Image (cartoon, rainbow, N blue to C red; front, side, top):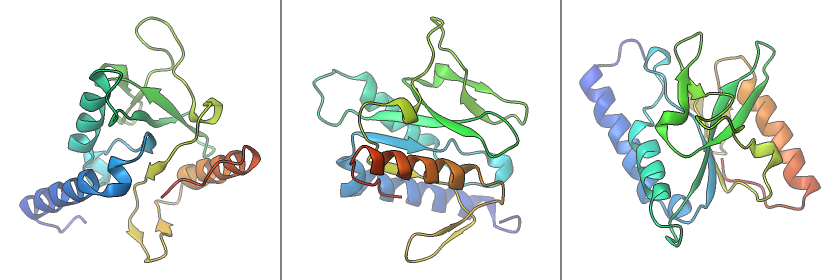
Length: 167
């Protein structure tokens, strides 16, 4: 990743985001969890994807393409991370590692909804990773944050008889 030409990297990031935005599984999803890319970590850029989700979600409530977006907030160094609902980029602040994440409360002082307390299931998780295999398994960075969250969410989905999300 360090050796990758920045212009090629940008082209590939754009292609990945276009592929996701045009995919039927993305178009049909109503609720999703997605990471906010960090340039320093050389993650696939999600900025256009998130902007599209938030722009679409800000439109008329009757819009059938409206999506509810949850993004990560790291709570501690013990692999504890929550996915919190945001309605706009103004809900984000830089954490101690300069990674954007939701503030604990919005600008009105209300707590952001945690995906683990949501009344409806998430359809899709867009996850960062260093590598993926054809069966969908991922190689992360070793912190266990996403693995821990996914294990807990899958358990919740089973308990509530929800369909498991696409990863």
